Structures are given as structure tokens and as C-alpha cells.
Amino acid sequence: MSVRNGLLALLAEHPAHGYGLKSEFEASTAGVWPLNVGQVYTTLGRLERDGLVEAAASDTGTEHARQPWRITEEGREALAEWYRSAVDERSSRDELVIKVLLAIAAESADVARILQNQRAAALRRLQEMTRHKREADPERELPWVLFLDALSLKTEAEIRWLDLCEERLEQSRGKRGRS
Amino acid sequence: MSVRNGLLALLAEHPAHGYGLKSEFEASTAGVWPLNVGQVYTTLGRLERDGLVEAAASDTGTEHARQPWRITEEGREALAEWYRSAVDERSSRDELVIKVLLAIAAESADVARILQNQRAAALRRLQEMTRHKREADPERELPWVLFLDALSLKTEAEIRWLDLCEERLEQSRGKRGRS
DNA sequence: CGACACATGTAACACGTTACATGATTTG
DNA sequence: CAAATCATGTAACGTGTTACATGTGTCG
Image (cartoon, rainbow over all chains, first blue to last red; front, side, top):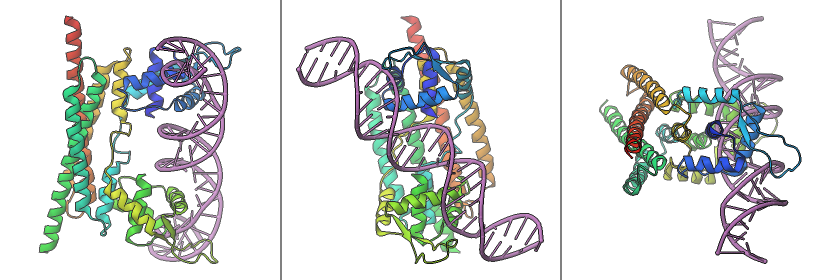
């Protein structure tokens, strides 16, 4: 729903056409999440179908120069609802967690190695981000800086979790060994 | 790809049929991510198409009792590659970050309120998890405990990020105000 | 002129989700 | 017997991704 609601958020500011929305979306998200133009048009089609968006002007005549899109009242309500509601992490599948849990369940998998690999990759990412952060200007590149913040914090949490996994696994093994 | 690779991980242990895979998947992930059986069969179909799994026995005769599925050599390689490679957060769209960045871009949105709402929800979740953790037994419910760990750490990171957002926004406003 | 940004769209596909249809086996 | 669990599958839909086809305007 990110793209869908993202377009809605942009259209809430001012009417725009597909290509412009692509540019604005990428600009707003610091170019981090490139957006295929095609998806903008298909998404706009779905938004129109759902009554959240409408063509801003008469579509008479020229095919290749459609008038921009405008958000509807219903669209504004849907957007407000998106803003109001909290993103729920619980329901979405976390690939890393699934991977580790299934590796634990599968005796054949080398859990220790998986944890090490993931942590090594996470540490590399963290270093890279720290480098980027030093070069970034919080005034002029606020979205980019906020993205780096988010990614750093998430990565740190990931590393802590991997550590915790190792600890708990070791404790499990210890208890099992003694019994 | 979580379901797809998850099934592969389970099949790497021993051949199984669709329904059993559903149960095992849910058991391995502490029942946190329920899996519709239908998806198991469609996913198995795609895995078969890609040569990662195969029917474990002769499919002669009875329709309604298909023989279990078995992982292929190619399937084992794909699974090993999944285990080896690190999950990349960078490329996947983080809905919360997108929401906040677009709200900042859109002057009409009440960013402060969004941040407050998200934090309030995150704090509620955190309390709930702490409660669950107290009741959980790391010995007998390791997957469940690890899931709670992951969710707690992620949520804490989320809260820290929301705080950071407020700080940076305030600094931005301050600078803009003085200039 | 040729390259590049602007601009609109379609088609095909991947993954995930829900709902539905069908039947066998077990168990209270 | 009735209900629950085990078991297999299909259909329809939503979101997202990539690739492709097509055309306009601008600028070096």
C-alpha cells in the first residue's frame, strides 16, 4: 500500500499527472525507492476505480496529453486514515526472523553460520551508513538523513537481535546438555 | 519469498505434503504468521515448475492422496543461497518511513500528530510484548520468545527514530526561523 | 540530427491473500 | 452420526515489478 498511499499523499498537495508523481515520489523519498512509471499509471487506475482520484479536466480530444489527476474527498479521507493509523509490524512477515526460526527448526541448517553472515552484512551496512551520514547535510537533505537514521537504527536492532539469538541458543544447548 | 524459501527449508528436512508443511511452518514460526493452505499448494506448484521440488513417489491412480513432495538438488542449492545471502532492508519499502517522508514533503499533513500517533502505538505494542515475555518460557517456546525479542527491538528502534524525526524537524524549523 | 527528459500506457508475471469446493479419516 | 481435523486443490483479486511500445518537446 506504500505506493498507493504515497501517490494519494502527493495528490493531496496539488493535482499532478503520472510522470510528475513519479518524480515527486522519488524526490520525497530521497531517491532511495525508485518507482517505475508504469506502476504509477496502473496504481492511478486502481485509485480511480476506487473513487479516491479523478481526472482533473475534460478528456476531450488528444490522447497523449491527459489532464492531471486530482484527489477526491473520499481520497482525502483514505489518506487521513492512513496517517491516523499505525503501521503494524506484527502482521507482516519478517524475512530475517522467518529465516532464523526455520533454520533453528531444521536441524540440518547451520544456524550459527547464518547468524554470523547476517551480522557481518549488517555491520558492513552500518559502516556504509555512518560514512554517508558524515557526508550528508541535515538542512538540505532532510529526507536522505532521516532515511539513513531509520536504516541505522533498524540495522542496530537487527544486530542486537542476532546477538540475542546466539545467547538464547547457547543457553538452550547448555540446559539440554546438562539434563 | 519468505513462504517459498520457508517451504524449501522444511522440505530440506524430510519430504512432506502440503498440509503438513502448513502445520510445520506455523509451528516453526510460533503461530505468529498463519499460512493459508491454498498458498502452500500454489507455492509448491511454482517450486515444482522451477525444479526446486518434485513429487516424491509415483502419481499413478488415486487423485486425492498425492504422494509427498521432496526437495531436489537444485532446491538445496537455492536454499543454501538463501541462508548464505543477507536480507537486504535497503531495497524493500519501509511503509512507516515512506509515510513520514511524504508527510514532511506534503505541507498540508500534520507531521507532529503522525509521529505522536505512531509512537503511542509503538509504546502500546512494547508494553504488550513485555507482558508476553514475562509469561513466556525460553526453554519450551524458543521461537515465540525470539519473535518477541525481534519485535521488541524493532519497536524500540522505531520509537527512537520517531524521536529523532521530531528533533531534526525542530532543528530545521529553528534554522529556518532564524534565517 | 541525435540524445535525453517528459509523458502515457499495456502486458506479463511474481507473490501473497481470501474464499470456495471437495473429499477422507478420526473421534466424541 | 456429527463435528473436527486432515488433505488437495482452484478462482479471483490486490499490490508490486519489469519490460515493452509509443510519442512529444527540448537542447546541444
